[in-house]
Length: 636
Ligand code: FEO
Ligand code: CA
Ligand code: CA
Image: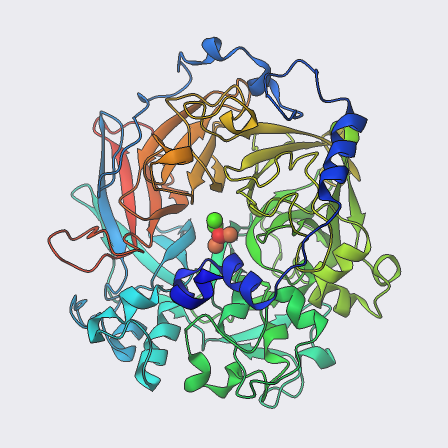
């Protein structure tokens, strides 16, 4: 309760904000549920060294911990945790800043002003804030184009120049909207340093006002019609894009996550229906105040606007005149990323997490098939949507979401209210599914379940129970885990899969129970809250964290947020990079020759304790850094 009184709304996490405004009931019979789950599975005494709980843990977790300290599989020496206000990389590696918030993308833009932190106009001409997921494209003529999500803004930083720490007028809103969305920017390497190519014809920004086309089953549905768009086929803008996806046909997928945080109501007594409640839409925004200057964000006046966000947005970064397409067939929820794989028969499979406590894991399967060099432009326009259901014994299945299975009137409604459809089929409530990543070497897929303090304590926003068990084994999960599954027969179209946990994060220097983590977590590599995730071409998995950086109590010794790399076969994990103070490390991309790794540093100094990257007493700025080896070799 004290948080509602004393903490400015923008400093609460989205989950905390949502729960204050849409309180979840307490689960009363929770302990009994957990007891039953554990005893039914016969987990206790299963021989896995995990104190009070017991998990299905992969090969890495079953190996004795002494066997995995060697570190032979990686091309770098692991680095220790730290709390330095800089980027730390292994010995023999170097880094530099490629792009940062407020850096002009066009020559008529103004250099970033550390005092004012810019205007609406300067932000419209410069790189957005809080960079997150990204992908790098080559235009075939040697030019490198980086597409980057600009997820959100920190109000105290963005509007700190005026002393208010909050938007006060229409130009402040213009600046905020222009800091969100997606920046597409050409970058080039000169004298070993990558930087923005100012005025490149590829440079584009897709802000909260950029025209978009609505495609798929929900296109033209009544729930998507507005005063400005009576057909329900065109909308404006994308915002709060978190992780991303990259298609084999060269497009970029921006994934709309906490889209609801920007809507408010001019009528404080407005009645909020269950559909809005499930998605966190309510009478108050999180302080962005966009409705102050754009009534599109006033749900009392435009109640269908929130139904036009929460989608995967497909962008062609190499076609400067193209219009982004919202892919409603892939469902509306708080998207993290979209991992695209091509099934054996050519159908496109998209794995997607819904990042909220107790929400679900989804799979999209296209109707059409991918043809290399063919016309793949509309493969994400139609297909089938599934949700994951986990069973005992390391098994799971994909349950299709249809009007029949969900009881909804149409596939359009299934897609628009995907969360509610998934609840109707009894999907498994998860510990906040963040990025999903598919192993390029074999048919297995990983997903970060970042943490969930409500696990075993409160239901999700739809009232679904969240008992501890299966892939979400710990009550009040503070550290997170990485789930892995293998589709039956190595076929991504299969209905069933085997699953285990690749790693259960924890702190073995503080705990000796389940919070110590799995056996592949040691005092040397421990971390919390895995979030960003992706494979390199060698089949090693890179893990980024967005967690508790207090470096004390249960998080003592874990330092700032970081990036690690894991071996899927041995379970071995090594720390590769540590970010500056109060940042999240999120989003990464490789240069074509794998000699440069681009990594996102988001919201350094979100609580006022960083001057990254410019130093002195400057304003902290979200940035993309390039990491390479001193000897010019392959990174990792
Ligand atoms: Fe934007 Fe789920 O992190
Ligand atoms: Ca994330
Ligand atoms: Ca996160």
